[in-house]
Length: 354
Image (tube, one colour):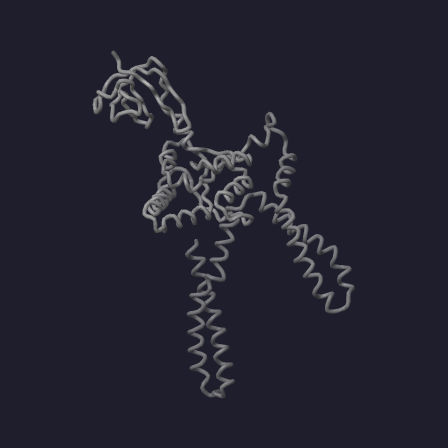
């Protein structure tokens, strides 16, 4: 469908260019005084018009239409309703002013009605767009209540989740999507993608590798993930910082943010935005061990304290084994003595089984 539309508009543009080029060629011949030799001018400029029509037509037809369609698809329903309502109210107000303005002397009676319609439509769209949250609240109050009321601060739109740069670079989001625990659409704002591209183009090798890894993860999510991933052009012009843009956009869409950034996590929580932290998820799904349980671990290194040995479980949990120094590079049975939860994760203390 897209190819046929492009082809149709290119042919239409070529015909229009040929007619316009031929007419301009004949006018140019008459202006140069070559009335008896107009054919070369008409043919050459007609061919130029055909070529220009074939090349330039999509930039005035299909490409703007495609951008408008993408904007409408990614636009929140509240903003779309605010724009439509603003245009309608502006036209109604302009119609009421048309009669008194038509009584003015020329040229004001011809110019002012059209100018007032444009100004009133613009002001109405701006006002309703700024108050679209209030408009959503009014529309929600008009719908019949279904079930018990829920506090607005505790609700969010679970149909889409905003992704931060850190969680894309981390890469674990791709494994989580494979499991099917996430059913929402993953939304990647364009400013996050731009930041990811800047990191990938960095002169620092480590940052460049991290950025390229993030782009690879994003490509995998778009092509192979069972969860829909969408790039959106929605932006927040009031701020330039990416984290601030992300928090403001999350508040506007009433959607959660998935991130691994500690600072962004705190800022978002302070502003009432729901945060989905993959590190918290990883800590939550780690195996739980109680004091007295037995497990087999491989001592890989010495601990900080004398005589201690350190082992790691498959999920990365550190196991500190008292008197385990002499068992380095050996797999032994240990008994859990204490489990400590820290900000960095869970730590298990154990002793060798006697």
